[in-house]
Image (cartoon, rainbow, N blue to C red):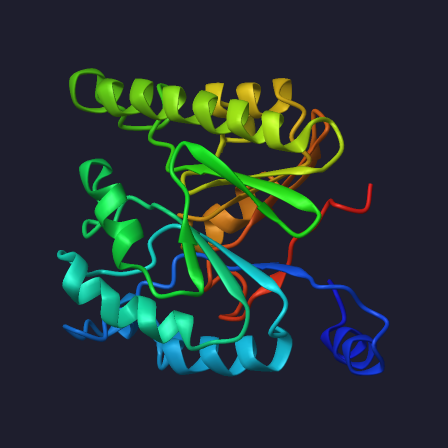
Length: 255
């Protein structure tokens, strides 16, 4: 685990460049409050804890990657309250979509972009620069390996997300030009029971450096989650309750 005291000292002494941080599944609900401690005591006052850790770790020149499930809001106007709260925290923010981000449908992506606070960018099937790295993203979905996968209900979303991943990876490769690391943000885990899904296979084939994902909230799922280097890609689980409600440094970039 990265030493946050060391990071703070290095930043204070001027020896550190801007950093990439990550956290996902914030599940904010400031417009229509939804107490998250109904999902367990560990969620009590989670927004305040996230903000405190964020301010302690993240610098103004840093970037924070948030891989989905940012807001419980059903409408964009309500989600903007949560997005403005995030915008007020230090650093640049890059957000991708999760399965509970109902305020952001594919048809509304351009509208969402026009409405965003100035410090926030969103990604869906595309890519952008973030310091010395290139970031790309898609939501992902349940795959045929997922227990309970329903062919008629899940297959269309699965196929569509594969196409978005392909588009995101192509855009990232063009920006990276083999000179910069590529980071993929995907909400759904790209491994099921430690076995690669088609998402993981395409991520590895594209020469990605790091893949961050969320969605998993049970300790037993955390224990079974794939993390570390697999097929050349560093996988990192970033669900905020797994991270004890504070952003952590993006890993795998120093290989």
